[in-house]
Length: 85
Image 1 (tube, rainbow, N blue to C red):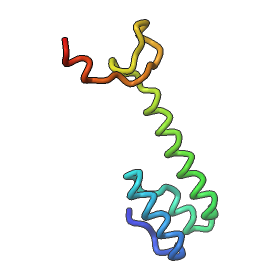
Image 2 (spheres, helix red, strand yellow; image 1 turned 60 degrees about the vertical axis):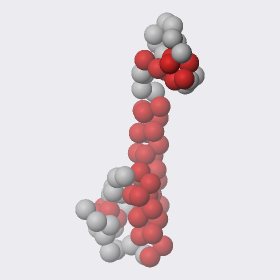
Image 3 (cartoon, rainbow, N blue to C red; image 1 turned 180 degrees about the vertical axis):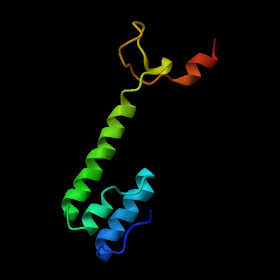
């Protein structure tokens, strides 16, 4: 869904930038258009959602980010060290 026309030019610019940065269209546009949500509430909900996604991604365990115990997230592995072996 494209960004609706019910926003001010400044609000629409912010929503366009949000979508360009995170790759997802802003949520709750219909609620804002219906008067059920303020722009501040819409913006906070979208920020919260994106932050939650970032936190979930940051906590994904992959073989390159695990310590020897296999559970604790460690520092990033320098891949050049692996190529020497």
